[in-house]
Length: 308
Image (tube, rainbow, N blue to C red; front, side, top):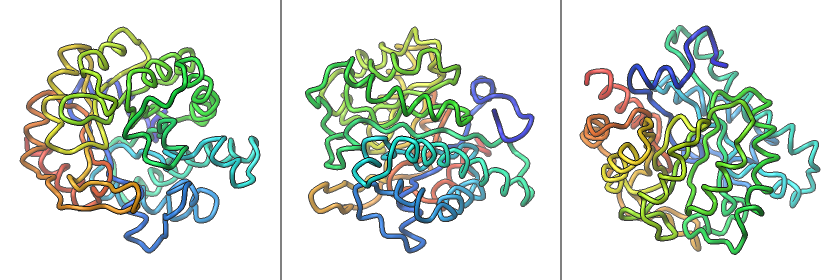
């Protein structure tokens, strides 16, 4: 369900490279919104939904083809801590897709004619905990328990009309297995993206093992990595493509490091346009940015890919 009569995202990946957006949280913070909250950007779904649309639009205007929704930390359990019941939480999850779709409509109204898609963010269990555990994984839950956590949210996001489900920032193979089970039968394609560190998942598993889980999953149209250092991307691309034969999705952080205790970013950016060209040449077909990667960087990615 694209915003116009364009082909689906899977068909677009078969034809060439697609530009993803950048970090939602840094874009919202750059426009003055305080996200020092356990719900992070998901809080604005209820309090300032227009700000979320504006953030999506900024990335479309920068050259992105795909908007990833503000639902990374939007869960039934997380909203329940704020006194929002299941019906209200389902409305906010649906709204996350609708706001991105509205941004696509506004972009087309401004004369942007290229295809635009909406990817519904499905963050890991650790995102709901809001304690940095998505960078460790191994929560002490079984695959079945993780599947039960993820499935209701996935059902709502699929029914909301997302073009693709972004199973993102996955730290270990247990959660990946749970997500792959949870997306079955939803009639909505998905991509599976791990957060990695030096050639392994954050929980320490080899990437060959991690990507192999998705090799035969018909629902999965792309596999790859996000929320990692740019320097970890190239190896992951080759491994993902070799193990699965699927298009590869990559959207790393700027290169700065997240301090979960201080809830702040430290260090310097190492994200460059030259890396983007290497990723494309190595086999990446969905390329964008995650934390601390803003519209200016996405515009650079778009220019680099359009001249490749």
